[in-house]
Image (tube, rainbow, N blue to C red; front, side, top):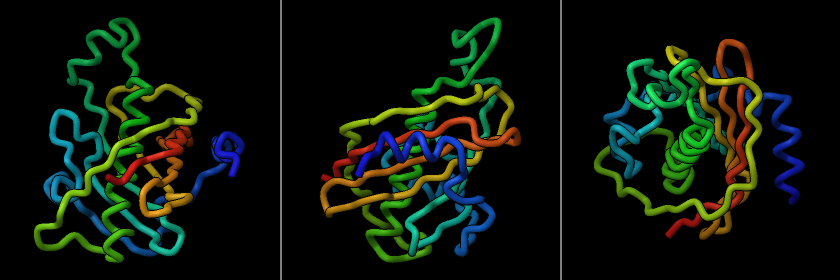
Length: 175
């Protein structure tokens, strides 16, 4: 599979309209912390909003708070949310999807075990428009391939203006 080709194709068209996902839910940070190892200030997904178990697509959202200290330096005259954090945000959403896919569930219940995972390769990213402070972004991630050890994920960042970033994390190692 040519992941760079997929990335180029997906920078122009939504993977899915997040509202169109067949399983709808509204999990917040407390629930997300049950299935990922990240914590504030580095938990970059605020909500999980939908899931398609057959297509292995998940959607979430986060508010880009203008009060975050990173905007004092990135950039003082023109604050922009860093692209590397958009990659991380997509990866964290992919980790949430791993919970649902691996456990073959559509809900977070009990005290689930947090899967150890590491990104090992990022194919690339297209930043089509800046993500500005005060914006609520929708995040969509799709698992393209998984062999039990490595997974390949593509993600998109969406604002009211439309698709603003497309990211391909081509290898994620499930430890």
